[in-house]
Length: 137
Ligand code: HEC
Image 1 (cartoon, rainbow, N blue to C red):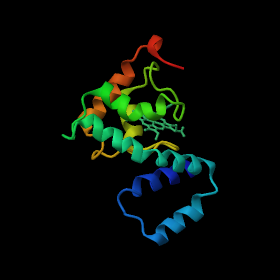
Image 2: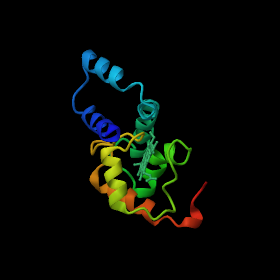
Image 3: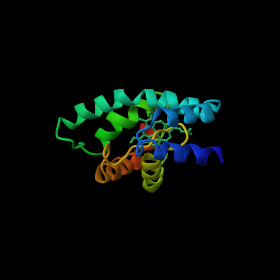
Image 4: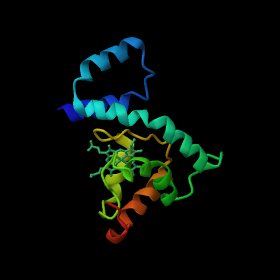
């Protein structure tokens, strides 16, 4: 399955700092997939998000609750039509946390070093409980 292969590539990438050979292999074997092109363009947004994350954390590495994580991380894509709308849909928190940790197709994975378990749980519950009327198109 293409999806599973890409998911496992995404999961392994942060663990093993890529050598040039590995990069070449991944590029040549995956570049002709449009899902991967979307993944690569999503990854280009990451340095920007990391900067926003540092600002949110006020230098102490702690997120200020679920709404803060959503605004500073998820919203960069999910409020800007890069990713699908996830608020106001009563998505189960377990589904949200699984996708954030593992990545899903065009969405990159976020490790515990970036969003700790507690903050991830809070943002999942925040998103899950947003009312449909507050959802933006
Ligand atoms: C770099 C952009 C980006 C960021 C940041 C991002 N996402 Fe995503 N997300 C995506 C994209 C793109 C998809 C659609 C993936 C696909 O279907 O190919 C997605 C899909 C999802 C889905 C599945 C939606 C559905 O319709 O089932 C969930 C849930 C989700 N993201 C949650 C989050 C949460 C929570 C955060 C913040 C911690 C977050 N995302 C941050 C880009 C992003």
